[in-house]
Length: 129
Image (cartoon, rainbow, N blue to C red):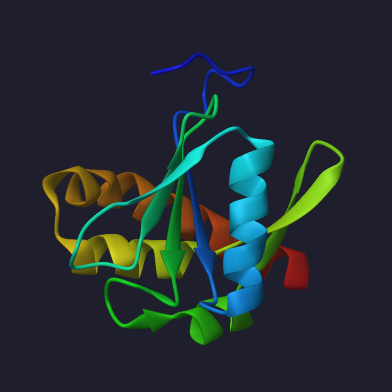
């Protein structure tokens, strides 16, 4: 795998609403990254941008477990990444998606993610007091 200026980042995943404008922006991103757009599977609308320093997987409109773009967007979290702000799925949604996917690598991550969610909820409850 190509090296990255962020060695902890091995692969980036994104979820987009499947719209003509977003497909056009994705093509522009691929050109900017000198990456090629490759379908991941015939059974999925997921594509991968490969050839960049960090491969990017893009899912369109939903995740395993019946999680739709609209539902995920309604519960998103905003996080700072350097000088930028990005939207990420709520941790509970990530957990639900991994559980629904059922792959061994996803199931292995569940205990850690569930513990992190407990801590996050406890911190949020403490802030409200």
